[in-house]
Length: 93
Image (cartoon, rainbow, N blue to C red; front, top):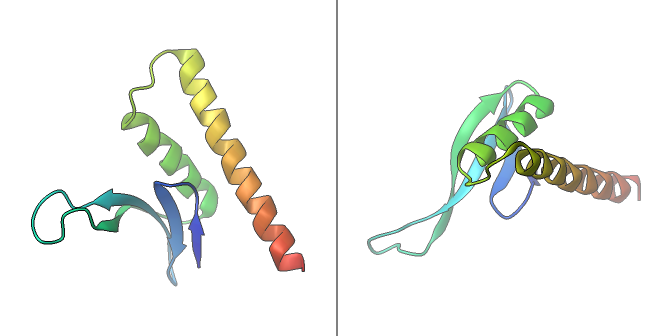
């Protein structure tokens, strides 16, 4: 299963883990500009993977101040909830 969270992160699964992956771009060489996904972490469930994504995103951003950090978290969670509801409605059809 593959679930794209946003333009940067996606969640995939294997037979034992939920895998958080981040999209990156090759900076040099023949493949310069090519996009690929790199594993951020392995989790035992989706909730942990979402929390890992929020943590990784915050640590790699320039968000400062409690209000902005909370806004980032709320916005990210709202995006994930919207995606899950969309998937749920597609599955129900």
